[in-house]
Image (cartoon, rainbow, N blue to C red):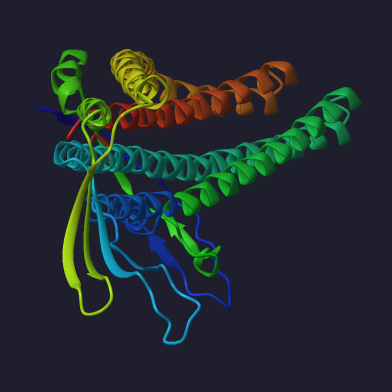
Length: 413
């Protein structure tokens, strides 16, 4: 369905430390690390297991109670009593109440499973986005190093002309300021890199002791050329985990409503006991009791109304998910189109023209054919075009990653 047309090969700096062996972190490895180590995901897995275990504890059968009863104890010798009794009591919820409660819990388990699936998609997108940001920062740093080198070469040329009297002090001061600004830009790109690196490591769940500066990022990222109708066809609402989670939330709320209504039915209490009336008169007996929903207006009606409003809340939540999915797809799609067109135009024409303008302008300045202002303008056009291309390429991948959350296929790999 998709035809790969854009391939971005990022050239990476190599950082060597005498005390550390270098390692390469690939995109697929970062994604797998997040699946196994991400702290938020692991907490969600734990909550899922807790919910599954609650199926065993919500059976509606409480622990039995054993009681010892003795009355009519006389004050005479022999500890004479009128009656002695040992009783075993058991409380049991009405069977329908237990059934609805267990079904609600089962639906809540499915809710958590789909929420986990949804969060897994989001974390995968976060990993890919941070990885793209890291590689972008490395490429930006390379571009700004080149920018600094060009301006330093220009400074040499201006300084030479200044010494021979062919340039004034204003031109020299102007170039020196440009060099300082380029150094500041290079420092900023280092900050962007470190911010992206540690954001990536956090989502990966990478242990602190493993977060070494020797980690390298190198990958060839592939992406397809897609059409909006393909996205709308694939991003079906009914297969989105977040939406499916609300479907099961709705089912759970329905069962909880039935459970609340079933509380009007009597719970059961069973007592089994042995009696000793003294002088060898020993008997066995049993007792069955039923609860009476006497406080229905105060307790049970409140539970029923709470369950009804919970259903309304979930229905609105479903509507919100639909609208939000549409918003995210449209936003990512239009940004994708814009960045794709910028990248395409730069590759097809702007890059070669900017390089030629930069080279010709430097030569013309050395020959005295143009002034410094025209030369700086040509240099800035070259640098700005390259860095705009890098930003567009970054956005191109980020928007594909945003679209990827709604699909069952990888758009960036």
